[in-house]
Amino acid sequence: MGEEKKEERKIRVLIAKPGLNGHDRGAKVVARGLRDAGMEVIYTGLRQTPEQIVETAIQEDVDVVGLSILSGAHMTLLPKVVQLLRERGADDVLVIAGGIIPTEDIPKLKEAGIAEVFLPGAPISKIVEFIKKNVRKRR
Amino acid sequence: MAEGDIEFVERIAEGVLRGDVRSIARAISIVENEPRLAPLLISKIFPYTGRAHIVGVTGPPGSGKSSLIAKLAKIWRKDGKKIGIIAVDPTSPFTGGALLGDRIRMQELTGDKDVYIRSMASRGSLDGLSRATRDAIKILDAAGKDIIIVETVGAGQAEVGIVKVAHTVLVVLCPGLGDEIQFLKAGIMEIGDIFVVNKADIGDADRVVLEIENILEMASEFLPQKPAWAPLVIKTSVITNEGIEKLVRSIEEHYAYIRGTSEGEFVRDKIIEELVDIIGENVREYARHLITKDSMCNEILERVLKKDIDPYTAARKILAEMLKRREF
Image (cartoon, rainbow over all chains, first blue to last red; front, side, top):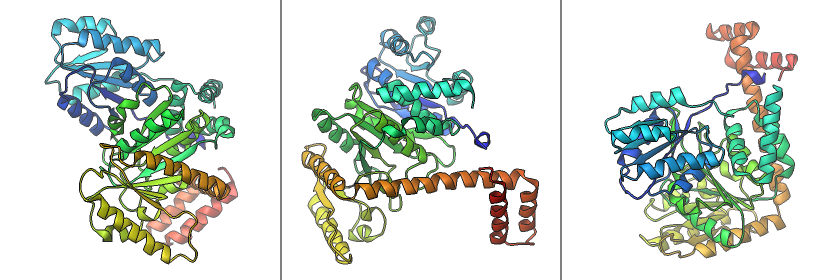
């Protein structure tokens, strides 16, 4: 009868703010939106180093890391997160980003392993849809 | 179970016993999400459990549980203890989602290799602790953590499941929660080994301490004999660090007391509870399966719907059918 039980897997998302800016309204709105979409969202607060974010992602065994950044340091901090995840063998984690990011930087970020970048005004439903479509079946 | 599944679970179990962080994290995901694989995983690690001191931390939302836990962990780290923290936050009954925010107060611990923190969603468990939480405790225990701190969802009055799993239960309160009558009510005021009056830097903490002491004294008067461990009341502040060191040493004292007296009984009671829970869960699943899928049991359901027979009689018939088939 083991087969009878539903293998229900909730999507786990870490929402993190790398770097030094102290404004997290956007991150909170996204966290709340993903919660309402039935996901388990871990929010860690402000001013996280890439190392802290990756350590948290590993301990929490998340499927997705969402990075919110407004400070302008995205070209250093975001690829660093992806690189550290890879080093820890967690390259199956989907990494997405949002915040104030010039459109000309987006292709470079994608090349560095950021799966998608959501700019101000992006509806939560689009983020939810993207996660559901791209989250990897992991093992 | 497929060959690949068995191999996967065995690899994870080995990693857990080595204390590998990724394996611990995956193992907890297995007990949360894969009821098919969880029993095998637990069977691999169970012989290595039973060494950790399990500390439960409960109390109303906003009383400062997470911040207090971060302080306790810091001190124990200085003593060289390895720490596991399980922080449970509520699942929305409407969407099934959850916002897990306890880590915000524990940021300073991230990066220390000997502190593992896991946020868990309550996922509909009513007493504040799910079976996955209990299995997660086993995993951290087998991974060599010396102290495992379990933070329950912000508990009001009835969420007392933590006593079933923790050696030492802290009830964290703070000034401004209400008058004495709140403490007279049943529930979490009855389960504390140590009562913490947190946020001593604001409000009238001394009065709260006095009120709790009064209630505890009153309660002990009704007992046939004085308990060997009288619950302590300790005033703390995570801002000024008042009382933190004293709290740590009192928790250790309580553990020493349990080990010297009733640990055998505690473990026994814990296992009985767990067995009853697991059996109950299996029986419930099987009952649901039969009632919805089996034609004969479905017929019994139809008869109840027509008021032909009552639910008690129907349940007896179905139970008899379950025992006859012995498929669970």
